[in-house]
Length: 330
Image (cartoon, rainbow, N blue to C red; front, top):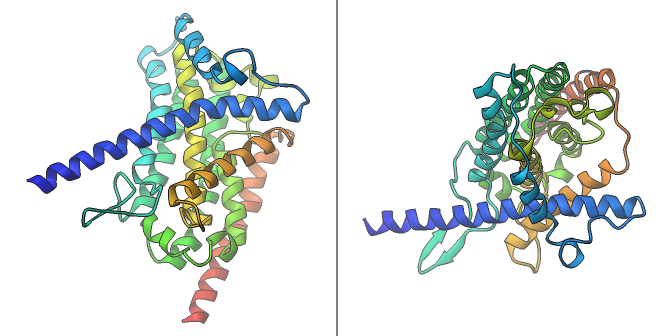
């Protein structure tokens, strides 16, 4: 009974640490993006609220909480209210299976630095990324607005298309590590990260997760010059804030997936393992911000053609080459 109680306490502690860290990262990633983009455009970014603008996320939260929460008269009320929660909750649930540090040895016990070490953790992540589509699609449909509906349809088609490319990019990693466990995939990269072993799969995965996160140059569901604001046009107050937070939580999830699958997870010299994991995730987030400030938006036909005509065939070819290579190695 004592072992069961201790295991429960450890899970609660890890859950609190992960949720606190992730929500803080999501809040300050908004500030970091505004600061980095400001510097790229030769301006300062937020610097009035608190020292160096560090209280800007708190000011944004207060502003969203104080804004009137409007629901369009013709909207499907319950679906309209549920959609932002789906986007946020699916992103938070993904962190349950992501190992963020090497196992800790305390008092003769080995404590895995993951909330729930599933042997099919990769499939769990892929399932949640598929469910995240519903939040965007339902939000656009329930608003009863043509701009929101078009944004929701675009998001649904885009995310389904690039999820296929993302899944194909993951297959060579699973083949070489022979496991769906994220812990086992990290352990297989102790000497060499998968980004070097499978460079084409790494490139496909990076492009696919950028499209999954609906960020420039793949931000077609929110294209302001065509759709006002896309699927969340009719949202205000904290419901819009939940979509906003869900986007940055999803960015952290995808950065963690890239770190686990291709960048060696927590492996690294000198620094503690958790520091290496955070450095890699934040490095991926910085890359996404850099791309947003650099690349122009694609046309929608270019977006879909690139996914189906280039990434998917390349992903299939990469699987065949990897299978032949593994077979040749015996």
